[in-house]
Image 1 (tube, rainbow, N blue to C red):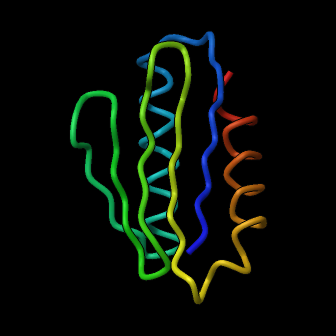
Image 2: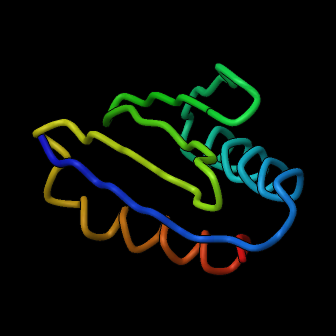
Length: 92
C-alpha cells in the first residue's frame, strides 16, 4: 500500500477553496469513477477501486491523504504529481 500526503497552503477565501475541492472531486468522479461525499463543511472523503482518501481544509492549508492499494502502488508518484499540479493550478 502506498500513502500520499500533500499539504498546500492557500491565501484565497475558504469558500473558493471549497469550490475548488468540489470541482476536483466532481471531475475525478466523471473521469475516473471515483465516489465522494462531504463529511463536514471542510472535509471530503473519497474512494475508488484503487484506494481511498480525503481532502480537508485545516487552517490555511489544504490537506490531502490518499491510500493506494498494493496493486496500484507503482503509479503513486504519478498520482501525487497529478494532484499536486491540480492544486497548484486551482488553489492559491
